[in-house]
Amino acid sequence: MIDSTQSFRFFNRGPSPAVRLVFFTMLSLLLLFIDARYRYLESTRSALSVLISPIQQLATLPGALWQKTGDFFITQSAQRSLANENEMMRRQHQFDAAQLLQMQAMQLENQQLRNLADLPQRNKFTAQLAEIVYAERDVFRRKVLINKGANADVLIGQVVMDEIGIIGQITRVYPLLSEVTMITEKDHAVPVQVLRNGLRTILFGAGDTSHLLLRYMPVSADVQEGDLLVTSGIDGIYPPGIPVAKVIKIERDPAYPFARVFCLPLAGVDKHRHLLVLSSQPKLPERPAESSAPGTFKRPMNRSRN
Image (cartoon, rainbow, N blue to C red):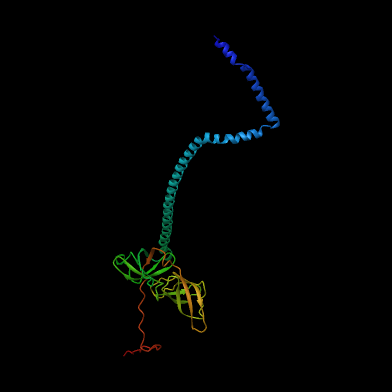
């Protein structure tokens, strides 16, 4: 019978493991030296990298898919978060813009109210504050209704103005409301004078808030563009010296006896909401009766005493 140890030794011929380790170590070092020195294995390495590349991609595929999946959910979450944040910021911006506009409107209104409150002290006449509550929808009627009426001692003929100049005149009074006819109402007349030279004339409304008219002005009248027109006060209704309009255009044609003078109203006839109603001026003396023969003077007869 053959011993198992002898059979193992019989089939296991060759160098020992230590010799093989040393051999392959030396071979590896030699190949490393040759590759580093002479670059003989570059083509081999390139061919092996091409063959191994699909295996590498297949090995890294699960990790890449996991990374892309995580990035997708993170991106979607970030986009939803950004969209919600943008929507909140947009709503906040709209709210802030509305509040800003409201604050600006309140500031302008407060400034106008302060200017109106200072008018009686500056111009030495009494007035009461009123607010526009209704406006005519007809574009051809320049009238508004204010919240002061007969209960507030408002009378027909009282003048209405803002902090700049004349707005109009009270033409109808109700218990709680009053109707104000704008100076821009067609054919509404205001006695004025040119501030530069004192020339007196009548300013008429044209039915349009953009301009007024000076009618029946001679071609040779001393009126210039830019002249300021103020109330003359000779009618006993409008207090004297209140700004009304400014001359913006003059058309003179020698073929016609009168010039066409266009004026721009100074007051905010269609802008402001708060107005001042001026107190009525003192009643003027009655106009004396005309004699039967104008231009004659009759001397009274002296009676002698007996």
